[in-house]
Length: 230
Image 1 (cartoon, rainbow, N blue to C red):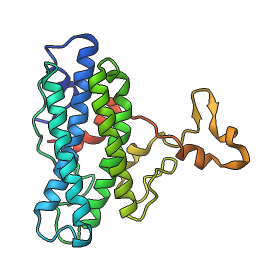
Image 2: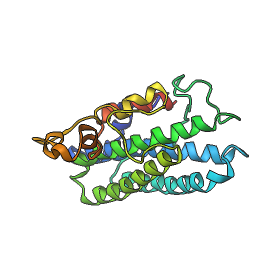
Image 3: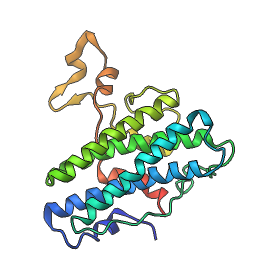
Image 4: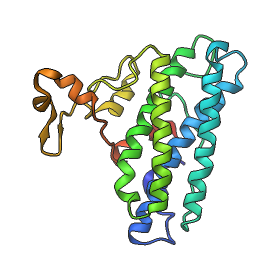
């Protein structure tokens, strides 16, 4: 049965009000952590799939994403929630990444997925901060994880020969499904300030957009990750 946010949210029977929102936010972040941990674990299990020159990087990402999963599970259970179990992951995204099976010649596709999932996680964490603000302990943990996710995203992007930061709403060379991950990143107005106008001749609209990272809502995140979860 496909795992949806509605089904996940329904499990929060022991929490009410803002406490339920906190649990639901943590569950969403756990789903993303499952995707990331699963991607790196699967890649490292296939002999010779990850080149020796990059093995250390992706093994380290695997080793850091795994405790993210366990930490989020603990945060959920300690708040009376029932964490979703690790889902079966369809890394083709139900056809969004056709034929991907960690096979010979598909390493670059793997790196594309790594970039997509890492960039997604950074924006997803931002989108949950308001709900998590009701629980200072959960918020603190989320912020510590968010910082590491940002470092992961930068590392993968640079490894692929891209800038460490997102440029406007560009999905670079990623598959079409990934465009939703970058939607809205071209925004140049923060609050009531038009940053592009404020920096004037010292910068550009592109620089103004690059200087800020935008959140993704729960609905946006679920639309992106649901095809990968079976």
